Amino acid sequence: MNNTTQSNQENISTGVLVYSVILFVIVVLALAGNAIVCLAFYRSSTFRSATVLFILSLAVTDILVATISIPLWLSLQLKFCEDQHCLTPWKITDVLFSTASIMNLCAISVDRLVIISRPLHYPNIMTTSRANIALVAIWGFAVTLSALISTSWSFYPTFVFIVAFVLPLLIMISSYSFILKAALSQVRRVFPIRQAYYFKRELKAAKTLGIVMGAFITCWAPFFLVNLIVSYRKDIVVSTTSIAGIKTLHYINSALNPVIYSCSNKEFRFKILRVLPCGSARHSNMIDRVVFWSTTLGASTDLSSTYRDSFRAHKN
Image (cartoon, rainbow, N blue to C red; front, top):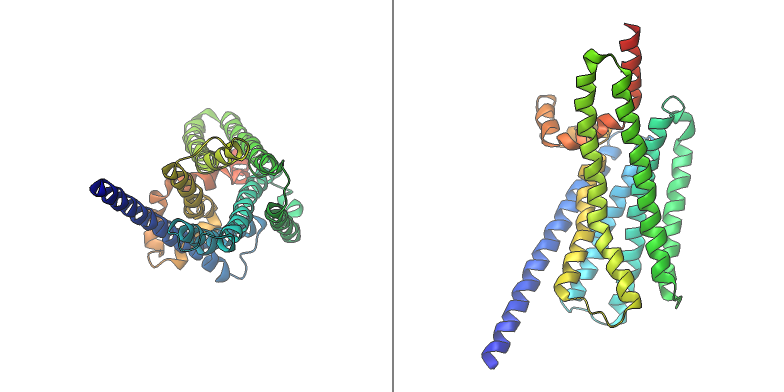
């Protein structure tokens, strides 16, 4: 009996150790990737478009997740702090940064939709001041949603599920569906001799958009669905392993975002390459091949250039 108990304790200790290492790796990757994004922004005084501001806000949010939310969550798992003094701050910060991250992702999709639908009027529509107002609204909404945790509102779990996951998900699906539709329509507008090139280009872009939405749904859907279910079904007990896996998916999103969203912007990608030690001009082609899926997203979201190419093709 004692041997069995000792064996179980050893297995638990090993599991906690492995989980701690996984979270540590996520923290390092999230900090490294998002710090490079912030550094690229800092080192370029002329780099201040609305798209970049949304990406920067997302990077700052993910840094906060890596430096605050994950350490608090890990301290709870390691039993360093089990009372409300640790649990409540973790809940508040987790909801705050999660909501801000999702809303920033939603803003990026809407920003790209405007680029596609109104390429010529985009600079006048999405000005820097309007982007700043949108960021204030995003963070204000996130703060309000996290502050509601202290209330005893019974509808709160459902409200969070709807406004912090379902609505952003629908907006992102609608935005990227329109982007994909616009991209494919360009294939039919060019001369047949160039259709093969455009079709191959937009097919890569479509795969990339699938990766974007797939990453979002995979990382966030389990978290919100399980949270909603256990909030109303107290009789359902979720295993510790399942909770650990769900939170890992949730947190790993902060490490994926810099690669998916920062490198998808062509101008931002070049700025990042200059920051990296291997970012010289002779290495840029090799790096672009490594992140080919993010590169194709940059091509798809810059369809204004595609419109120009199409016009030139017809003109010639």
